[in-house]
Amino acid sequence: MLKKKFGSMMSLMLAVSLTLAGCGGSSNTETPAAEPGTSGETPPAASAEPFEMTLRHTQVGADKERRLAILQDVVKKVEGEVEGASFTLDGVDSDVNRKEKLRGEMAAGNPPDIFDLFGSPDAKVYAKEGMLLNLTPILEELGIQDKFSSLEPFTYEGNVYGLPVGGSGEGFFYNKEYYESKGWQPPATFAEFEQQLADIKADGKVPLAGASKAGWVPLMLTNHLWSRYAGSDITNKFVTGEAAWTDPGVVKAFAKHQEWVDKEYFKKGELGFEYAEYTTQFTSGEAILMYDGTWKSSVFKEGQSGEGLIGKVGFFNLPPVDGGVGDQTSLMRDVNNGYGFAASVADDPQKLAAVKSFIKNMFNEEMQIRGLVEDGVLPAMKFDEAVLTESITDDLMKEIVAVLNASATSFPAFDSLVQADVTTEISNIQIQKLIGGQTTPEQMAEDLQKVQEEANAAVE
Image 1 (spheres, helix red, strand yellow):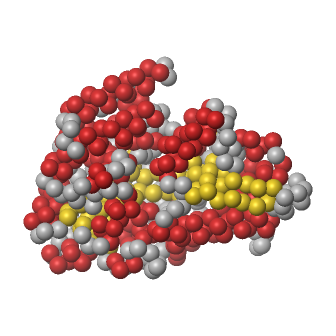
Image 2 (cartoon, one colour; image 1 turned 30 degrees about the horizontal axis):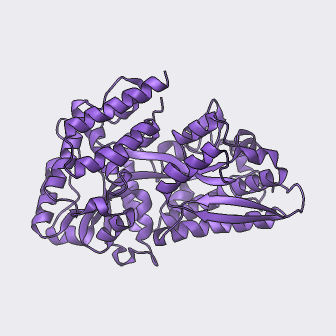
Image 3 (tube, one colour; image 1 turned 180 degrees about the vertical axis):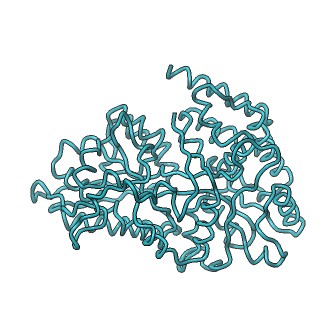
């Protein structure tokens, strides 16, 4: 059973990501010309014959332009290093790629050469079916096998089948100007938080951004709520049968979400809004709060959709709930988003050389720092804490760091723990029914538990 807990952080990322001991001394002895965190060797192409690589990415939309630019720079380096290589980039929405396109391609046995890959449970499922390239010998060849904060989500039977490109945490972005006009600080208690929501509503503003056409968006907050009420480790226990979705704490979380919907704390019509609209509600000033991942900090930079709020956005954790179970500072953190490679690449020396070059050029200190500074993506690799500290330049990121430092433990997102059928049930059916008033918290929990038990039985 996947279980992630991390201690307090002395800097930006998960504590383990900044632990210098065990970082692999041999990988810190590159020549000056080498990329940081690599062996310094450029994988040679097998021949000069032209060949094409397909690369599926999810860096689509205005708010991901910087992330796409980083990827494009990596591709240019690979094309320059590996003779004959040319890349075709295929941009697809993240949800569509994960739940529709990639699943279909895997079933048909024809995934792209390189593709955006979700770690647990997806990577392990595809690895079990023999569809992913075993990266363990490549990591050893490049000398970066010990450079990652965690490879667990991409590891199956002791081998690595994908690499995390960055980390993330989740919490509330808030409009500092509005809060200052009210004389407010980030709430210290749940009661204070709910009073703020009520006051914002009374003031004619939308308390919380809402966009629930894709169920994973509202479920970020719901997941945090049930982790507060029922304990941050309860989702781990659904798959083993040690706990159930009908746990009183989980039901209480569903009820709280429904209560906020009924009080119109979210924007009306949220079931028809896509994720992009979620951001717009906040950046336009219509919504005062937005629960989202730390990756969203990238929009509050020059040239991005939220540049008008530079210096005017803060970040805080969900406050402790009365009667909550376990660590009430815990929040979601993971390194579950990354890249995978088709197993068929192993049979083509030219494509294998290109994959090695891609890994060398994408997964190194330079690109991790670029991801942090330019795009607000937390590092997934380990490197000197001083380098990390020097790289933090904006106040919002410093505030995010402070919140993460204050969190004693963390939990992974629910969809990295439960089976695909359960994720589909809650993301595509149950959360929308709850928001739309078509089910009750109790019935939602019972329906989810039925699917969970069926999924558990299928793997016994």
